[in-house]
Amino acid sequence: MGRRGKTEKVSVTLPRELAGEIRSIVSQGEVSSFFTEALEHYLAYRKQRVALDKGFGAWRDENHPDLGTPQDTTAYVHSLREADRKRLERPGGTVAQ
Image 1 (spheres, rainbow, N blue to C red):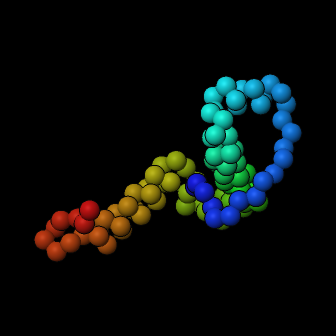
Image 2: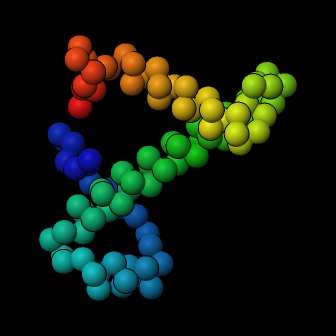
Image 3: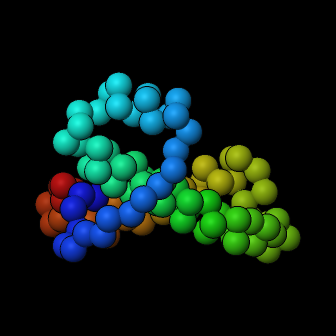
């Protein structure tokens, strides 16, 4: 996050109460930085929501009968971790950090 090359000035209208709240916690010279950071966070959140909404319902239990219970899921995760552990194992029995 942070500054991105060129800037553009925009005008927004805020409810008076919200503007006052912002002014009460942000120094005058930092308002643009405050909005930039807040909007970057909010845009990331919105992009994630869109992705989640698009993917909702993609999982079908009938396509994954091997993961039907919490115990099945735990066993699957353990098998992935074990495979990684073996892959990362160094000669002499130590695991790479």
